[in-house]
Length: 117
Image 1 (cartoon, rainbow, N blue to C red):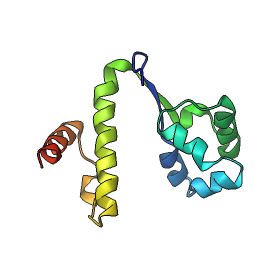
Image 2: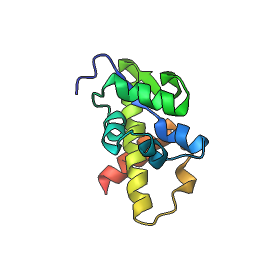
Image 3: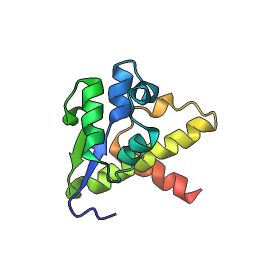
Image 4: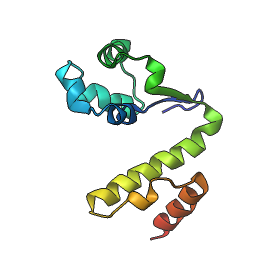
């Protein structure tokens, strides 16, 4: 993937959680899991998908999409990598609640430690 122009980050999970909804809610309205996965993985999606989500949630694209400029990509990718690591630990049954408000500096240290293991 070319990051010369940054990326569009999709934070739909946060929006759905704040509204007490989930992906199933979107699926009931014709938005497929494949479309959502593409959004979350920073892959190309049809603009119609964004329009459908906005229509279903009655919101603007900026409610769940955010542009990350190239100069902030390193910080973003570290956080993204950290969140993936957290989800892996959660699946293993580890209580991850203590990691929910970790600073970017702490993330760097934790990722370095996990890579050395």
